Length: 291
Image 1 (tube, rainbow, N blue to C red):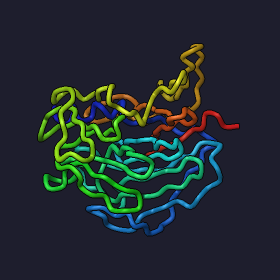
Image 2: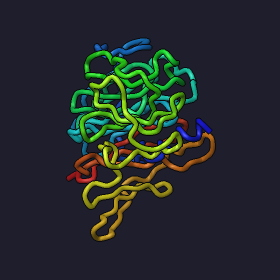
Image 3: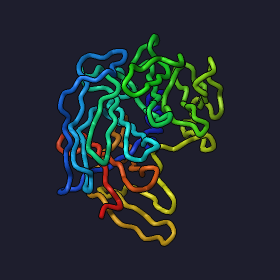
Image 4: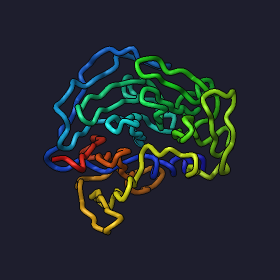
């Protein structure tokens, strides 16, 4: 019950689909040391060398079973967690962590080494993310704050899942096991979070305080995945077009839950999606308004 409950929100909180056959650039990182290790760091951080400005699809190989994504306010950087969620499965050294991808240059930067998931942008240079008792044990569970280029710090000791940005500049998160309090709000300053909505099984975030950093709709543009295709729909005219065709990323545990859905950048210029093909997991970005 506990595992099934925790997996449910990933259908709407992550983004997914697949890179197109042809026109996709795989941006593989080279090894560069960065000053951004966190608890559990095991080795060097990786950064991709800069690429030309992205005018076709970009795709990066990633680690994990249920990746989570957040667009930065600038609309060109994407935070993604490489993480095996909630199953207490050890990750190989250097695999689990949070990366920031720049979708116009192709640059990939490892900003956090070790467990952590559901990154949320708190401004342009700070991330918040959660770590549950499954990944960080009782001593390390809680809400972490990460100023880019520095070490993450445990800022709030609490049972934390599904971290999201709030409109007031703070964080909302789902408090599941062991606290089972529902959705909580934290302003980054108070010693405790406050309960705002739901019960222990109300996984859907409350809409009023949510600053959605993985929106399925921006203006009159909406994105969705059906089968092997990602569609963009003009909600004003009803026109729809397929923009990506490739194998989707399906949630397969504890049973097939369907494809993780794509989302748009805050300005609606890019679609981010996930794909699994031939045993390789990819996150891809497709520009919608490329010349």
